[in-house]
Amino acid sequence: MGKYNFNKDVMGQSHLLLDYAKKFTNNHNDAEDLLQDTLIKVFRYFENFKEGTNLTGWMYTIMRNTFINDYRRKSISTKLISQKEELSPADLSRSSVKNQAESSFMNADIQRALKTLPEAYYTPFVMHFEGYKYYEIAEHLQIPDGTVKTRIHVARKMLQKSLQEYKVSRSA
Image (cartoon, rainbow, N blue to C red; front, side, top):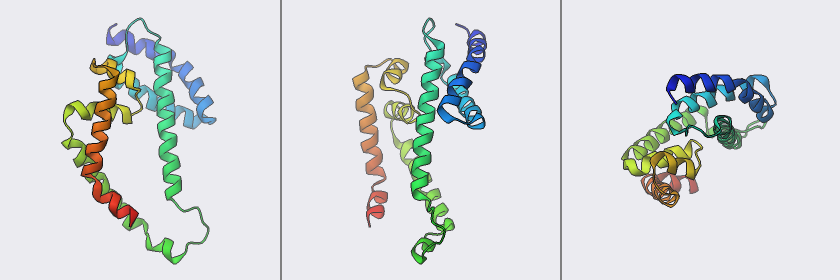
């Protein structure tokens, strides 16, 4: 299947995806955002699609994983942001400036740690983080599922070791 036909087929299915997105989000604007995020990933990973398989199902899986990952990120950030009307002195000591600075340093350290991963570990780890299933990663990389699981596990351990200082500082 050429890229032109793929693009035409994907765009022909976008109205179905928007309906799916509305079921996930219960909000038209959020559904459009989810559709856009999904289509970006669909085109980014079009080479993973196997001709002759269910294109709509493949795109739906990407949408579902995108929605789940976004929900997880939002629920984590909601837990970190205080919802109280009045803040205590302890709350004020963790100012947004300090949090942004810490976050900036942490993100830079995470990016640096990711760059130290060998390619064989980096690619499966990032794909898994983006929401791909083990079998999808295995198909893309043409390696067994067990190898994918092992590489993701090893990548996590390597990153934990590289970022150990954050584990210690968070528990203090």
